[in-house]
Image 1: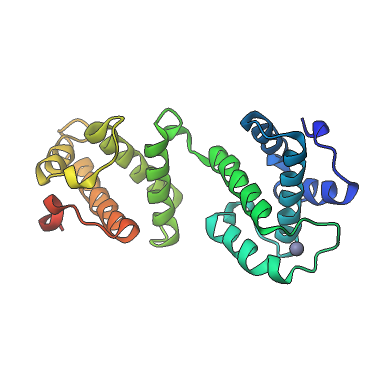
Image 2 (image 1 turned 30 degrees about the horizontal axis):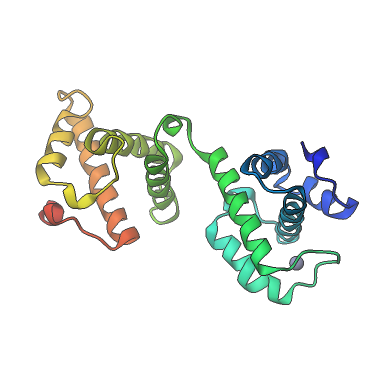
Amino acid sequence: MIGLVPLRPQPQAWLWRSVLSPFAERYCEYLVDTGYAAGTVNRYVRCAAHFAYWLTTHRIAVASVDDRLVCRFVNDHLRRCTCPDPIPRCRTDVSAALRHLLVVLGACNVPRFLQAEPDSVQQEVCGFTDHLKDVCGLAECTRYQRGRIIRDFLRQRFGRKHIDMKQLTIRDIRRFVTRYPDGCNAGAAHVAGVTLRSYLRFRTIQYKEVAPGIRTAR
Ligand SMILES: [Zn+2]
């Protein structure tokens, strides 16, 4: 597929020799599938190659590529970019190209236990487990365990509907905790309780919200 997006040797080398190389082909496919004309696909891929060059020169790992990093690149780097020409520096193009790149990288990062879930649940649980990593510094196995618990909670409480914490009551929480996973394991109930408390704290920080029904639960 990358053969359909002819690039000059230099941007091509930047892309293929960077941490983005495993995603390059999928990125092109995604742009083509989204319906962009060949010229736009080519422009966006060159923007991604510019970003790839920057990642390489700053030795930034692919796991660190997120919204914040893209903003840093667009807002800070582009203004004082001295990368070798020809290189795209149009803020609008670079910003759009990298937004698509984040989608492609994000789709690859969705853990297996979330792959059958709706997008809203995937985003919510990934946001929560990122928080457990970045803010709480929890180990991967703990993040995995808590992520699964919150997936089960959201599935049970909201199904495929919008996740609306205003609808949540203390009764919902109590019912989930005392029955999780089968209602006869005090240890599991304790872990479920701790996880839910941590999730609600995350919601408070992330969305500046506290559901009225859960104010007394903490
Ligand atoms: Zn540059």
